[in-house]
Length: 102
Ligand SMILES: [Zn+2]
Image (tube, rainbow, N blue to C red):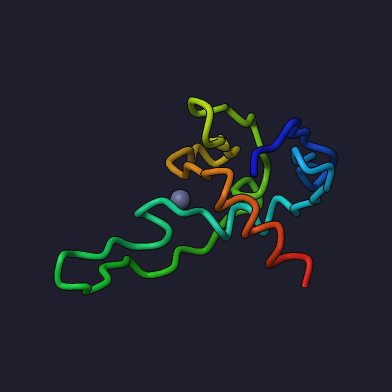
């Protein structure tokens, strides 16, 4: 599933999928779902998770500066606190969107 269009609208991003469905993902949800190693931790080959303590996120952490496309498979949000390490594959973005619907 690929998005045809992604638009930041207010405090959300609106995603129009190729099947015609639309998702609205709050920016806070998107930031908290950041899949980068710094936010989600890294798993070593033994399956141990290494993760720093949760840092409190400033309000700027939930403000989107821009959303860059990564190749043809992912988007990379740039946040107002300077964080830009999270690469959201379209599959992952879809899962985040569906988790938010429930
Ligand atoms: Zn992150």
